[in-house]
Length: 265
Image 1: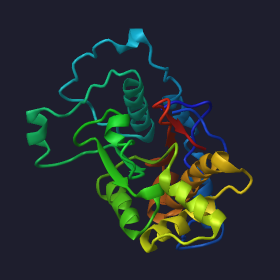
Image 2 (image 1 turned 120 degrees about the vertical axis):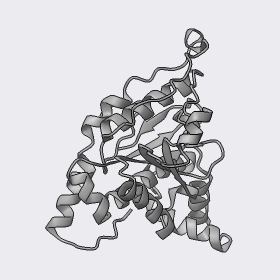
Image 3 (image 1 turned 180 degrees about the vertical axis):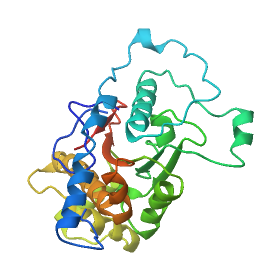
Image 4 (image 1 turned 90 degrees about the horizontal axis):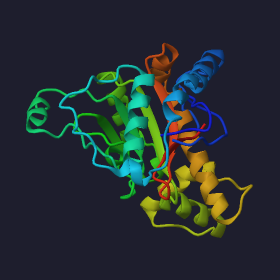
């Protein structure tokens, strides 16, 4: 991942190269938690700033993958690891780490992933590939348009609360079909098949009506990422960890054309 500026654990309105909260409480405490959740990741931007486009020189055969690597234990370390993996992906120097027979056997008794990635179901955006990670590295939760429901929220909470994961990434992507369907249904007033209509209804609050055509879809992709990230950061159990620095929730977008993951703030 790379960025034009620093990343944030929450709200903002600027996309950088690499929804509504459902609070259990209201008032000053919630606003304090949200401010902490949505501003505390500024230091993480450095981990996203070094990606470079692939060149012929960088496409040489990669070095062998190490058999073991220390697990990132902080949000900063986790974000830097994802940034490094995306740089390898963009440069066609993937390591495909953590696939050895010994590692597979080790994982039969325990797992220690270092990041949760909430991504879209799109077949072109598998998180383990675009971040060049292996078995036991990521908890991946996927729903069309990164739509949140109880199963998605519970899956993310499990990774954070039960496995001690320090980083959650909301990963949208260029040309998202779910976002396009939501925008087109909103414009036409038509109704989609029932279960798909549910997705459109969840995405609709993020539609950017200040834009037209493909620009509206692109802007809505980013707005939807921000909305989902903000909702996650406002979940009380996650917000408590954000406040103490044990967790960051970061929004990002994968560009199909450049293969880069960029933060969305």
